[in-house]
Image (cartoon, rainbow over all chains, first blue to last red; front, side):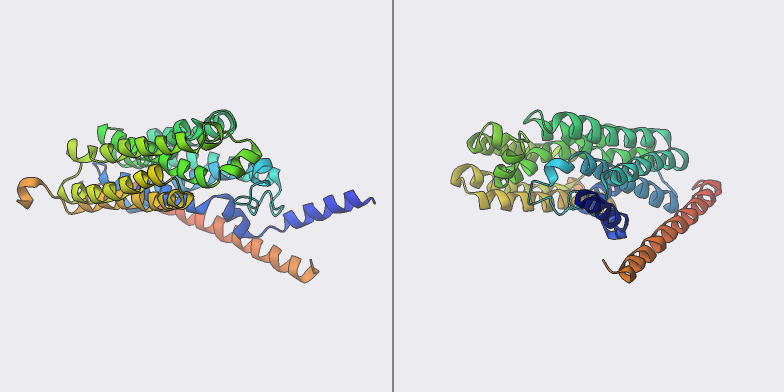
Length: 308
Length: 42
């Protein structure tokens, strides 16, 4: 038996002994947690009622669907993941899970989550879940990511859909308020990922992913981050405008928006990467707190006349 | 990797699969019960 055969056999044997934690890592648990949280808030805000078990089942399906997208993404991106320090420790590039196993795991999870959603909840939420998975896998991962610097702008739609799925699971329809939740995440995505891309520009350049700082340079990226932040903070008041939220949310969104704008302005003026890293970290907290405020304001309703 | 480590990892993996499947069965059962329970307000 040749050395290469032995090495290949050893790699297969090693991958066959992947720990459950490796399969869990394939699901991108940190992304999944934000997806589940925003979906849960969508369910809280939606008109209508759903049995607690069905709420759990819907969140389980959304989590599994998000995880499936992550696993298929890791299968497809294994070549570039292996060459980037941030992603080289993932289960597929590090050899702990075989690429084919990751793909099979992702596909079955996707099929299972959409099927269960259709049978247990309703067809609309199942169709939205399937759309989210397909958009993330085919449109973002396979088509846009390696072709255009607008990859995360358009691809952001996949990350923005979960609260709409949660809304549809409870209400059985998608209204204006659900679309507002969608657009908050959609406009949040570019400054979030471009801040990361500014810090990791060299890595993206090395593997040929045309992120905005690689293609257009850091100055253009900083300008884009600033103007998208203006759009995000402006749009974050839309729930108050359409009557979805009241004073609690409005005050909270104004405070969080001020901090976000200050950080975006610092990135533009000082041109330092640690400012970009800080905005990237804060943007996660920002989105989390915006959705916390939406839920709190809904559970403890407030209005201007009531408060005054 | 030593053989006992391979066996231990295999055991953990099998246990995780078994627990996952058991959890799914319980979830399906609870979903069935929830689907048959009367709507709120009825």
